[in-house]
Amino acid sequence: MSTVTVRHAQGSYPVYVEPGLAGRLEELVGRHLPDRRVAMIADRTVHELYKAGRLGGSRWEPETLTFPAGERSKTRETWSLLTDQLLRLNFGRDSGIVALGGGVAGDLAGFVAATYLRGVPYLQVPTSLLAMLDASVGGKTAVDTAEGKNLIGAFHPPVAVLADPGVLGTLPDREYRAGLAEAVKHGLIADLDYFEWMERQAEQLLAREAGAVEHLVRRSVEIKAQVVSEDERETGRRAILNAGHTVAHAIERATQYRVLHGEAVGLGLVAETALATGLGVASPEAGARVVALLERLGLPTRVPEPVGPDRLLAAMGRDKKNRGGGIRFALPRAVGRMGPGPDWTTEAAEATIVAALHAIS
Image 1 (cartoon, rainbow, N blue to C red):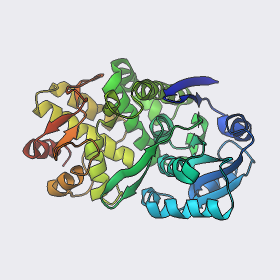
Image 2: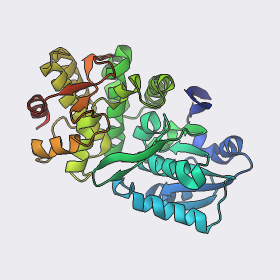
Image 3: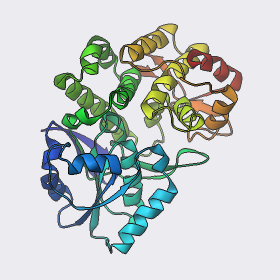
Image 4: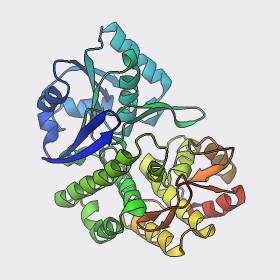
């Protein structure tokens, strides 16, 4: 079993990457949440797949709480419903939570775990590519509000992450491709060799060849684990993981989440590399390579519906990285290298941002 270790202030946790892990869920939950009453939290679509044996054939069925699939469920209202259910079922401080599903399930169940009775342990079982190689690693939990995405949350590391690339066969093509954008981000921010490997392996990745997908998940997990282990609370270099996300979150909000998160991240990478070029931080080559790779991976490089720059700027104004009223971005210098700025972010004027947004309009 391939294991990547993520360090945090209280210790560390393993991220297991191996086909077949989902079929060993009961065993691994018993190992990492021993002697605890376990509640599984999953969206209804994923839970139906799990009950049908399509996520590795596991027949273990703990007490389960479900919610409607989709980003629109990642709210304080859903958090309240789930915590109220746990209270009615008399789950105590000796309980544990299993988060089963994509990034929404992981963020939401993790926030439940972080806040329920002031915190109970939880285990992440990501079932989407995006969650597997990015969202499940790092201990960030959150819900969305009308003011913006992930603005209410907590840092709450899981006890373990079980990333089984074998379950990705259940993903629709669009959702699978959306997850690839986060891998492109990892190559852009930290590893030129990995980015170039994706350029060479684009066709194999689109065909979901098992060896290519397993390497993709493992390498992305390694990159994210290294960054978050160095900066658990996002006070410094961890900000580079937000590359593309200032624009991405604005696109999601402006389109009422009709654009998937991974698609929005890809669009954000295009716009923000254009911004880096406009500011003289990066050469045009970085942006051209990002666009070319995203297109080869079947991802949009233009926003699929009209969204005015004013709406995007208003949404960016709520971004968590902002300081003193200015909009800040984590920008690349080149493929595989980030900077500048003492906190790894750069402020940009609205006119410069609007010019960069033309790259995706």
